Length: 431
View 1 (cartoon, rainbow, N blue to C red):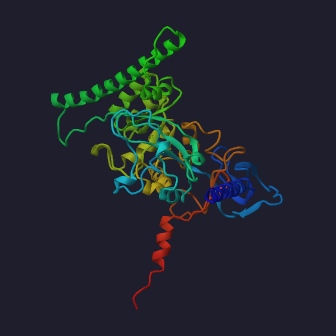
View 2: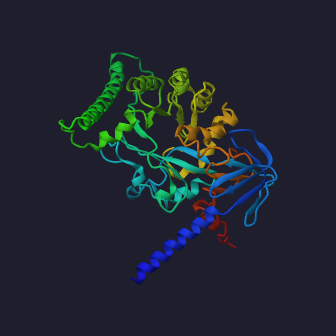
View 3: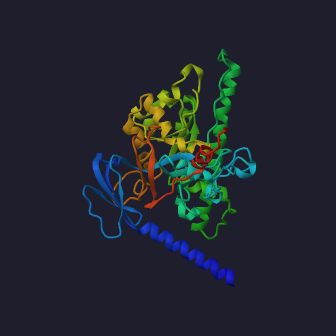
């Protein structure tokens, strides 16, 4: 009984402390405020109250009890949103027991990554040091790997972190095999290319089965004389995808696959988001016409085809944006380098992407793509106080994030990388 009482007291104290931390007021003064939506404000003030942005302007008066942060000479940006990650699903890639990014089987559309996310993963701390406050956590493996979750980068439990428990579904599109160097396009090659189309037909057949199941279920609900089909959780999970209320992320890379995916999306009437599109610039007009946004994979990669040129992945981003396609950046499948999210944007800027568009692709664009722009992605009154203070351009390696806030709560920036630095900095030297 005593242990239960102690546990209750600990929980209540934690809730009280968390509530106090969230509800107190913070006034950040004299910073260059980059709201993303709207004009940059020089020497501006930003007030945080009850976890929300309460005011943005100049010479805001601080009431009693307000914490004041002097940000003179610094910049305030909305928190960055990582468009695709495995945060909380993989700890040490070399140890299988710490990796939970996929399930057995090819069709698992009902599985939620929310069930597997470890809120205490070391990668949350190491990845938010450069301004990332929100991330899409995605499953992998199979044709239908499951359902992603959109989460904040801090919290004791998943419910505390959750922005959307179910943010998107996924379809891993088949990839056209690349011909060997010097090979000619002949009957054998054409046969290999036909394999991709056949795999797409299998995906369409699976969706057809799901539609048939859902139609039978609907008819049985309307007519009590009909027997409903046996419950199928996989088909149930595809219902929101098939009626267009839940977006589906489709991974594609080469131009031919992208064209095939556009046709597939149109015929199946899906609300799609493409991921990858390394050769997207070759068919940018078609992607734009289809109205499909693109999640850029991490830019630690080479070209899809050698003849595209070494810089093709970086030029591709700028060309997609110039075509009017909404893009956002992602850190990719390795959580240990999630901190590099803004540097992928920096690479794209170095190869032609407009800097302002790059910042949008880290903030308001992903917020719009995932349907949370009413809460996240810009510094506007009423939105979640997810933001950071930096000494300079966040795409510049020399800049340092000095303060970071999630839901109006200042987050400790101490992390594993810093701990290692502090440890080895004090290593005794030989005399």
